[in-house]
Length: 244
Image 1 (tube, helix red, strand yellow):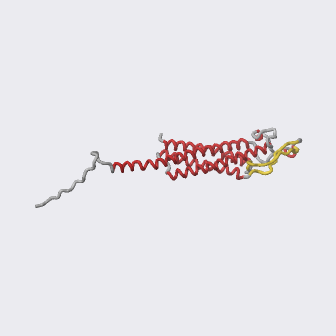
Image 2 (image 1 turned 180 degrees about the vertical axis):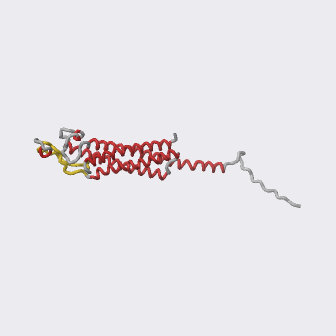
Image 3 (image 1 turned 90 degrees about the vertical axis):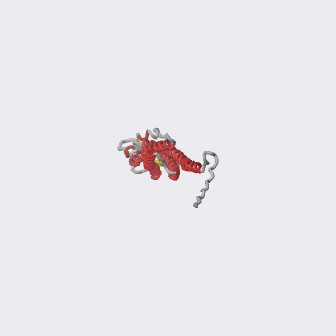
């Protein structure tokens, strides 16, 4: 298989994987936003308070419950979701283009390959930033839930323990941890796509330099090459015809 076809096939596979990874970010974040009634759990702050159980459950005794002082900024959740949605749409479009180029046995132009490299690098930094924000926000929420790991349960176990909040916390750890792992996978795939885009640009540049100029130079050399005898044939002068 030719080099350009191998690069196109690898790029098409990377786009397909990025679509799947992007969906694994969008779906958990959407479910978490619905369960939390539009509130963002990332970077939320709060504390634990012990009150009489009758005020919360109607039964006698004391119970500890989580009090959220301030929910996280919505932009923290929206940014991760935006990067994932862009990955799904862009990956689907570029994957279709790669399949079209594979079927047509040609590749992008030199300028289009350069734009693909620039866009891939930009989205790589965006997805990396979104991954860092999601990870730090998730760790901050877990520190709030576990009270800096002083509570008897871990962050994963607290999705099965009642927090007595006005939101559904029965699957927050599964949703946020899946979104976190998938978003880091998206970042890794954008890194691979940036490398593949650069290799395609380098290959297109090499083809642009050597491809069109080679046959043209060969034609010029053949046109100006001497005859097989080794010396040029002198021009023959026309003999005048004398009419009597």
